[in-house]
Image (cartoon, rainbow, N blue to C red; front, top):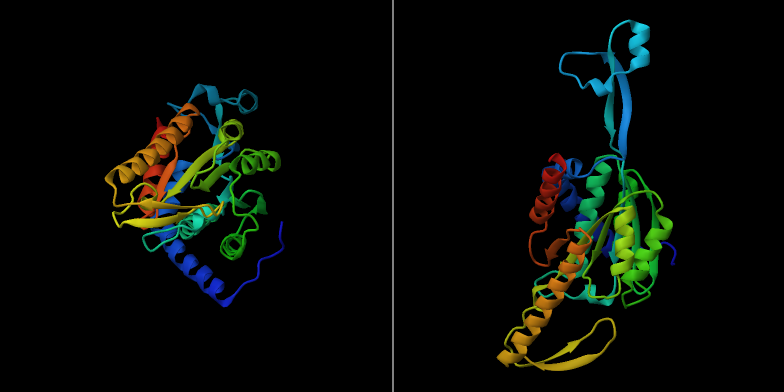
Length: 298
């Protein structure tokens, strides 16, 4: 893995813009939903007080009650501190974007929003950047300065690899993150073979796949002959987009990929967060957190 990335003036400006935008988003929309959506590590003893009518008799502390000569109960509070890991795909396919925003740019904003939400709630945040190799690992820590370092590393890091090995990244995450964490896996999920390590991670952690897409990956414009290049392999093909059959087949294949992806996750009882370039990402995130909160309160 490389050392610290070199910060250019443009990268510093990007970091500042992302900090300003995502801090506002976190403050106005996301942080409260984040707090409600994710459980702490458990219940922590807080105090003992006299029993009152309606209290749960299972909470009675019999030792204290015997000493005091009257019933007393234990009070607990939820231990809020969590560890949040951001496992982020920086492969070549993330350099694509057709509506004023690259997929990697959307990844950066979403990751920063999640990181600032976590640190606002006093949670630790860590980072794992990957392509077809592990590019960078930042151990989980607390604090705004640490989150700014994570944003810096995400924006300034120049990947060594261009391919994708999501399975390898999940294997590495399972190896290094022993304690339970909330793991956001942010990728376009165009790679295969990740199902088994995802299932292993699901048993150990609270895993949330964040699937990043661009509408041109499922809808071709009718503009005649175009050359398409695979950003990861460098392979190029010429496609006749004037052909309705070609466009329909392209869309059908994209739809099939999406359905298979979601079906695999349903089998694991994992619900993905689906985001698209050029569209608002705040409402989908808050809606996702609201659903988690609703399930938690049942």
